[in-house]
Amino acid sequence: MIAFNAQPIVDARANGYKPNELVIVSLIGRLPNLNHTVHASTEKGYDWSWVRGLEICIYAASGVNWMSTARAIAAQHPTWLAIWDSNRKEGAEVWYLPDVRDIEKPRDQWRWNLSFWPFEKFQNRDFEGGQQCN
Image 1 (cartoon, rainbow, N blue to C red):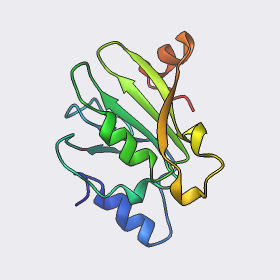
Image 2 (cartoon, helix red, strand yellow):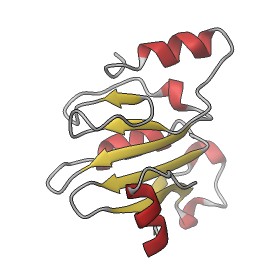
Image 3 (tube, rainbow, N blue to C red):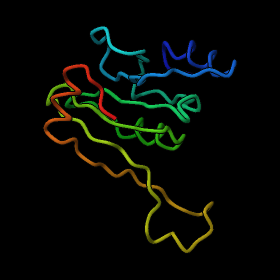
Image 4 (cartoon, helix red, strand yellow):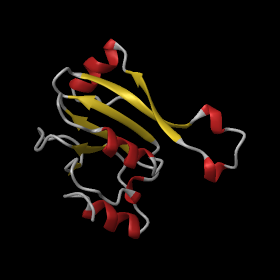
């Protein structure tokens, strides 16, 4: 199952194309007219394979359990991944990194963790103003 409104991206990717803009994954419903927006529910498991090599920002809000969605998307290795808290108007880059204790093991035995790099104040301001930073 793919998230609502992801089919045009899946179709484009099947034909060798991809969006040239940041793709929004909204976990909070409808958003103002932003970039291409995909809508997802945190209670459902989706196929996120179409995000590989794309710039993705997850829009969440206080009280939204977004961690499993972020982990599932990060596991597909988008080019850039961020999370945006629409209540606090703050964002962070999301990095999918192997657990340091596993580095000596074969790669297929690594455990992966999410790591966050909070946006600077100017990045939060620019991002909120519609100048998606990445």
